[in-house]
Image 1 (spheres, helix red, strand yellow):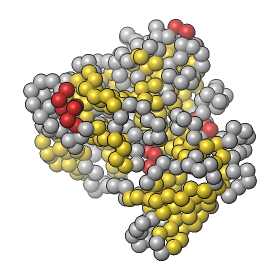
Image 2 (cartoon, helix red, strand yellow):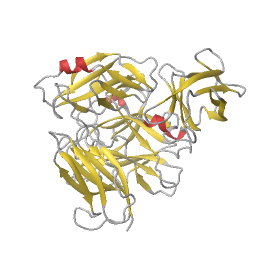
Image 3 (tube, helix red, strand yellow):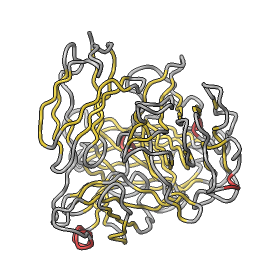
Image 4 (cartoon, helix red, strand yellow):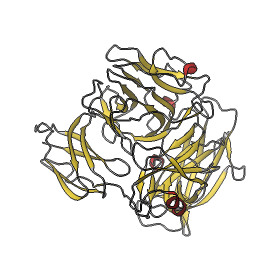
Length: 499
């Protein structure tokens, strides 16, 4: 048996123990776990009984990992020092006895410190303007009017003249911007990074923009590696844009939705590169065209993820009910909302509000009946549906899916794993594009440069890519990302070409 764990801070204060275990030998049954704090001082207690021991059952998840069947929370002491840590002794056992004991130590104040812009700004962060244009840059806004519900500072990439939030929401970036923000090196324990952010740029069509923002990983030698969010980017910067990001997939969005001064946030998770050697740094890149402008890019939270289970995003699905994953602690959740609109240019309309049912580890469900009853149009009218949840930073919106009033699902486009992989000549993969929609396939190299595009009609089809660019030239050996935009979340697959 092997396991990974982390402690996640919740809105109420205690840290939730996030734990998952995997079978490495014979299948297990009736698995339990006992966790004891064995160091002095312990720097806290388990919330359930105010003691230093927690004992709980584990349950098998659909992904094949064993997860706690209840929330386990740890309440930290108030007098932590910079080197505060706690040693925890984990013992996994079943009806036959102990299977696996191990002691691990958790550092409370240093883990993921390279991402804490509120404590170490700007010393730990590097701002660069590769083109020399400094009129758009990154700021730390730490005074009213606050962009977060709990009055925490945010990072703002906007015009250099808006060093504070005092002009909000009447702010804007400048034209022909290209600015980057790079973090400190991350610790070896970080497996992914979760971003809570909002962006407003000049749009061309529903998913094509003239400006945008994206993320890259930076290795110790300065080499950049493309960072693709688990749910994919939601658009790209137009080829005809004069932004240095033209042709690249990116975060794009039209006007921000504001509740008072607080934007409606989104969340995206980026996994550490599987290839290459760290320590890795996170780099945010923003680029703008030569005409028009909008508010910019705003970051409310950058969270280190230390176990693979935490990499789940805020992703809805339709199976007769509206189910979704929630990447944060579920204790004390406030009400959620579901919204619908008929097309990408329409206005979101609330169709449900209440408390969803917890059906599994961070998995929630909303009854489909009230949602279907609230949808307008004929039985086969295509609706986009999304979920809104409340975080300390404010309201967070999920990506959308497609649902029809007759109960049918628009489904999500399917992009199979490419094969062979690695490939020496051509790559094959299956596409399944839902009825009433069209798939757009883009292929990017490791630096995020667009090399191939093609549109596909609805239906199932086998696609063969011969490793050539749109211009007909064979691309170089290396890693490439297949990105399919269709119904539902954007899908991304990775393939390696070897010539």
